[in-house]
Length: 271
Image (cartoon, rainbow, N blue to C red; front, side):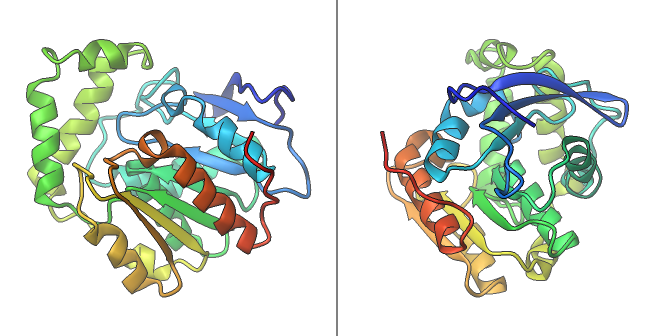
């Protein structure tokens, strides 16, 4: 895994179990440095991270890889319609296969929203595999505020401009939105919960959430700290569901301090 040294991610397609997975590589792989693996949100993609991975990796002095899951971005379509266990499938089947294809061992998982939940499930299912998890606005269980926000989004999908914005980042925006919203709004998903997996994880966790998150209450990250004493929490005022976009410098500073405290990063001063 390598990339140009100017900090600009290099896009590539990686073959994983017969699928083409869109990946963007940041920095140069170093046998002595762990890689940051960025896991996107429910409507996200590699490109929707914008310049955040490059900025974080530069500050932390670490290489990174930013990927679009199947059915997202420029990756292959879903193999089948996602069901209520889709995040568990991603965490226990798709992510391990991707890491093997990339040759990444013991990554630092940096996830946002659904991607944060996937990171936490992976860490709990395979204790010791991830060096650390940084979870932005994770979901541990389904809250009414999340379902209500997604229902509002679904009603306005075609009239709000969301469809056109997503089409700039996904090969099939309609399929991506339908698959994601369909699961979250299904009655079968109401009891979804990953508290057991969080409790089983052994790696250090930094959990970050905006105080104005429209998709979840602060109970989500508070529960991580209850299940995993020693978890570091950061609650950001004036911040909604995307802390890395709303408060990027605060997220970068907190992440670099967290990883530096674990001996996993050497902070370089902000540009």
